[in-house]
Image (cartoon, rainbow, N blue to C red; front, side, top):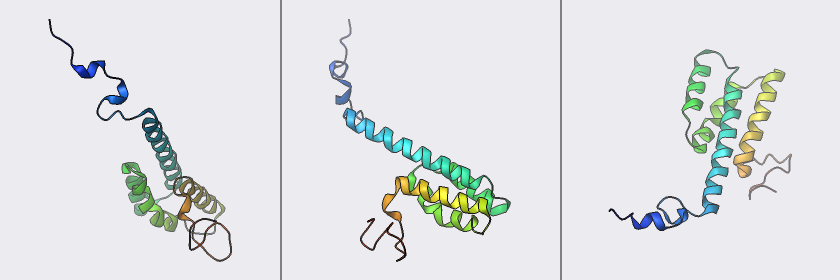
Length: 121
């Protein structure tokens, strides 16, 4: 008769890669925040047309980490430029999505209290 491995008698948190329950919850919360941000980016690129829109859609689709989306914020904001109400709303929603995951990303303009040279006020 084969004896089970000693790891089968340890709690799940002692297994390699399992981490503490709080670590798992933190990873789950981070993943949920990333998925919500990615959905916001998908919504923002959905109305874009042309080669730039196709490229942005592909980049957003292949993003695997929040930093991938963070690096696309500039080109996406440029692509959403213009005075049309739909584009202004898309930019606003995108900024809110970014602020939810990167709260200290507000740029200090001197006209608002959303950011400062030393971080968010």
